[in-house]
Image (cartoon, rainbow, N blue to C red; front, side, top):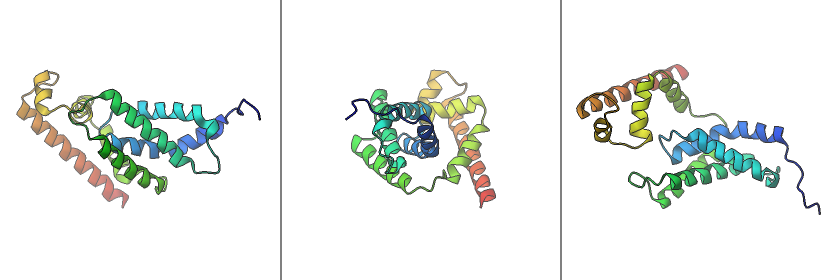
Length: 182
């Protein structure tokens, strides 16, 4: 038996990864809503997959194999983050990951129209609006904490109104895009 495994096929790996990257992103987003480090998590999962690609059984579907790496990298990210205040229990995360992986296995390869619409609508926001949403939903800060930080001008009440306006704009934009898709 050859002690050195054959060199992995980089082109095959790249093709499979590109085909399943959206599924991996969907899984990460479902496990860590509002996460701004999705690219980092996907990159870490991709590196780990490449290191183990020589062990991949080409007779089995690539998607579930890739989702396993995305799942473990998401859990590792949460452990590194150690922000337990707004964090779900490990048991809850496992259940969410199981459901997301199950959904992704039966997924037909298209990201949900709603997620695509939301991404397009988010791209229309100003950098300040994106940062404001990121502080609240990505970093998990309360509106009071954001107001007290002084990073954004305005009182707590003004920030609440700003968040309400942004939410309404995004909702209206997503609905409008949904109507044009159907």
